[in-house]
Amino acid sequence: MPRERHTPLTARRSLGENAKEIMITHPVTISLKSTLKDASDLMMKHRFDQICVSEAGKLVGILSKRDLVEEICRRRKKEGKKEDAGL
Image 1 (cartoon, rainbow, N blue to C red):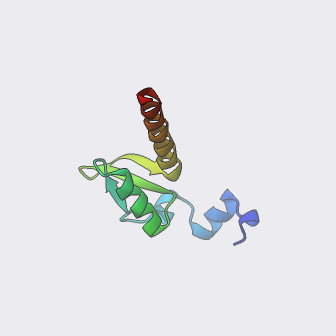
Image 2 (cartoon, helix red, strand yellow; image 1 turned 120 degrees about the vertical axis):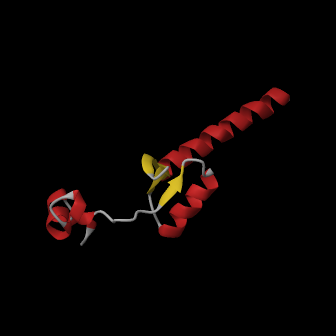
């Protein structure tokens, strides 16, 4: 369906009336202790924008591409400050 014609109503009509009808039963998850590289590799492999983070079989969060980019930027800024202090 073209994106401009996609609405919540059309999604419900085409996919189902409730979340149970459209959710996958075994989602791809990543461990809370996984690295950022592990998360980004998994997202790229499966073309996901978000990934579920689990611990002991329970959902503890959702990690998005935006979260990854923000963390990379934060770390680069931190590294830049360390380099500036060393000059």
